[in-house]
Image: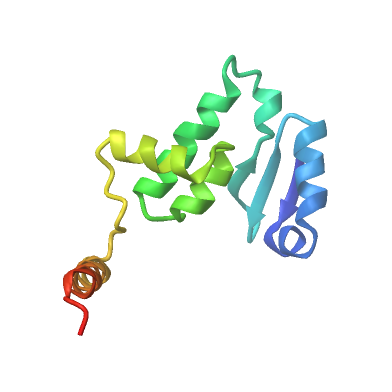
Length: 120
């Protein structure tokens, strides 16, 4: 097991990731206290790693930590398929910001009004 401090991790994250790939795990230290673990998902030997990536992507999107596009890339799925998956689980696709959702609805109403407006 290897340890890195936060400064080392910021300066060269690829070194820490390579160490996690080669060893069991890397402990990230914050002021001489263990703060986090880096574990290479391939080394965990999970029977269905793609499903774990999808579950992680869905969870991060649901919490608002990542966008739908980022979650699709994380899950290695096309965006349309990811949106369908999120929607099928009852996860709102309009985001978690109520003001932004209301603004999007207003823009949709304006677009609809413009489309049905008779030509002059």
